[in-house]
Image: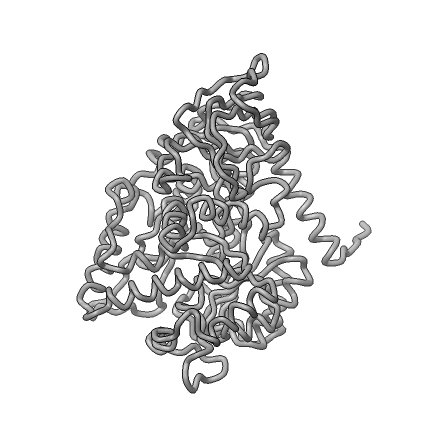
Length: 493
């Protein structure tokens, strides 16, 4: 047998072609998937519907949207008759938006009680549970039709989930699978590899690129030289890399060529910590204090914003994961609590109760959240690319899918208009993923990845929670059935 080695660019091109082809030629849903299908007609006409196209443009009233063979065929006014033979769905009083593109989503859950008798977490450390069954269903039910896993604990599981979904064997969104966390030494998470030298990082990125992952994420304790090697190899493979950083600050990461930064600087940028040691992640209290009295309009912060924008570094907003620990903010809804296993709910409520015992913690946490919101608004107004994703980790108060909806609501609280927030959560993610020609906005020729909502989220952003149908590749899924199928499973399955 003759073997031929493809160069990295050719290999990446082949991988992208395979992924696009798999999407374009959507598989016939299996019997398991078909249980959740509401409509799968070849031609579907959505009539009398309000179109919020994701571009940021005003809503279009009383439109007819025709879907044909998984694509958006046309958008016309109400006077246009639906095509002969089309399944006609009257959506008066409803809105349609593009499918959400979740840019900090996970197929795992972090909040499980594993404390010892001293209320500490013993070795091997903080263990994370894979949610291979419940997470994909919740994302799809909530309107997330494309997501990036943004760090993986079980990358082979995540890759297999993507294959099963693409093959029509299980319900779920399109997935950009990030490789395993690129972490440094002394991690709190025993399921993460410790990368301590540049060559080890390069080999890790190259290996997982060969296995089919499509992006990478660096984590808090990674060193500067190791991160630089990972970025260089990811780019050589034609892939992007993001980071939830600490040992390496934002300016260092920008200089190394990172593509995206997670969570925002108020929680993760250590550049202003006094006497910070190279390649050492300072304590959370030191990092928080370094931003506590720093104003967004101050010269150093404005310089940081200009540096990010100049180098085309995106920022991923993950406001729900920080809101979940603020005890003055509402608890999860009863519907969300019903999704959780008894242990997971107990763990989350225990974490909230512990946070409530810390003096002034809620006020400081609220101030930090507001400052992060102000930074994100200033970043976008300066021309930065803001992405959206809830990061369903933390104390367990952010659930897959539900958290994506909450992220959009919090963007409006941050000062964005509802139309801007929807644009950030749809078109911006598609742009970063280089898929804006296929998804992210509603336009003829694009994939029929759509969310039907009761109400008008362009006026009342809370209506983004009122999901009635989710179209993925032109197939309409029933969110009620999807949600019911995972009741009590979040945290264990």
